[in-house]
Structure formats: C-alpha cells, structure tokens
Length: 156
Image (cartoon, rainbow, N blue to C red):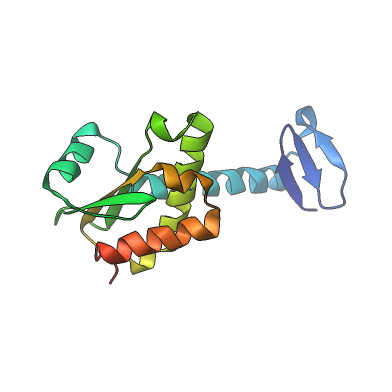
C-alpha cells in the first residue's frame, strides 16, 4: 500500500487518512521516512550554491561587474576556488513587505535552478530585485532573468 505525507496525517493511495498517532510500522514507515530524508538531501545540495555571508556579497559588489535591466541588477564575480556557481538575492524593503520579498527570492532561485546547466562555473552571482519585478508573473520574470544573464555573459 502506498502512503503520502499530508500535514499531520498520512494519506493512503486509496484516499483514506491515517491520523498522526497511527503511522504504519515497518517497511511502509521506513519508506515514508526515506522520502522525507531524500527531500532534505536535495535541499542541502541547493544550499551549497547559495551566497549567504555578508563578506561574500560585499566582495561581489566591490570587485564584480554588473548588468541591469528595469527589473533586476546582476553582479558577477569570477572566483576560481568556487566549484560551480553560487547565487545570492537581495530584495530590499523598498520593493514591498516580507511576503513580496520572499516571493521574489523563491522565484529567482527556482529560475536559476532550472537554468543551472547553462550557467558558467566558478562565478558568484548577486541579483538585486527592483520595483518593476514585483508585478511580473513567473514567465515574465524568467525572461527578465534570462535577459540580464545574457547581458552579463554568464551563459556557456
């Protein structure tokens, strides 16, 4: 029998629910735990390719070159010691509240994840989100990211 984790319950493939206290024991429970640990591993792999430290952002701003359009600014800094590429996203309070800023970050991260094979190695990228990007839907933002990446020559 197949089980799927559903907020506080486990959904059987037959459409019935198991309450949180009655998780299946044995191989079915291990299968559910393996699915959860696989998603954690994928999240950790993505974290390797993120810029997080203030020093890294400052280095990219100071020594990198920039390209821009109306929605985004992209700073690119070549670093031979970085294995692939790393991405950082800056969304200031000027563009909106936390919901808007986090939505922009999530969308740009997803767009970059899907374009990972096209991006050159050994670079740090920092996107600065401008006001114009907040009204865009996913497809328009994808085109804008593609445009600014092409202007900055980060494609292979």
